[in-house]
Image 1 (cartoon, helix red, strand yellow):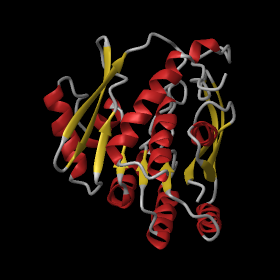
Image 2 (image 1 turned 90 degrees about the horizontal axis):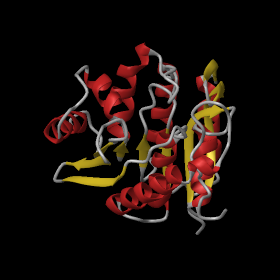
Image 3 (image 1 turned 45 degrees about the vertical axis):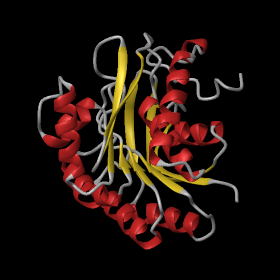
Length: 265
């Protein structure tokens, strides 16, 4: 069977993040990508100038259309925008029961623009976290989800990660890209383990879509039958290379995109 992954997320008109980054990530890793769009954004490398949510009923229609025809091996969820959309996604996941769900709790864009309504944060935690195989927050997102300061030590990261686990997800990947030091260290935390995954920190402004692309790469691995740890390790290595090659592009005047197809050109 052809491995298939579904992304449920917002559209980025500049092509660097969101649905566009997800589909590029799936394709680069040999997985067929399908999509259900939750919101349209008017966006470029310098910021978000507009958000147009897709009606929740039409998000449902897209999800049902995909699952009723395609053999979806994994789902990636990104920008969900608002509470009624979250409820529609949760209903769809319960109806179709995909084996793997990777949830990237997208709250703020690389540019600093807010992508999740403040009143929708609780719905995200209550309705979607319990359905997720893995959630992939960065350090500031973890802090915002828990209403705590940003973690400043490995012990803080693990404690916060376990607080998120208690909300019902099966595993948490706390991303360390917003940290400091020569290495960017992510922590994969589940009920039994905490695994530190380190990679060299790369000096570049071209990081637009990094979180979207990493979570999609993990979903791609799961769709191909990889274990969670293997999928996360492979995705971490792939996104590190995509960031390292990002400066080969000259796209836009702000935070440019990573190079999804660095393995091909």
